[in-house]
Image (cartoon, rainbow, N blue to C red; front, side, top):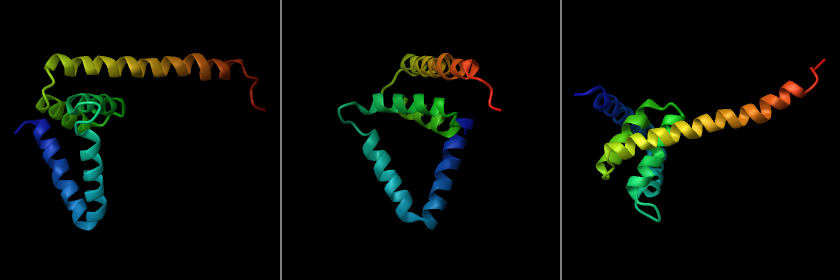
Length: 114
């Protein structure tokens, strides 16, 4: 079993154990995510690619593995998945730059707190 498969299996095992203690919570979570990631105005493949980008931006290893695998299962090509990585990278770089040119520069031009 690959590292990716092992990590996804471990998550599924642990969410199952969690569900034994709080079944209503896990059932609600699964219903919500299932409905959110199903075909709608956006197709399921596109939604998985969005979820992958978000997983990358939050540094969530399990979700990164899971959504890459799910995107592929929904028909995403390797090139589409890698392009998603580039888009997430650009958005994250843009976030750092936008904060740097606004908040940081404002902080630099403000008088020191006494």
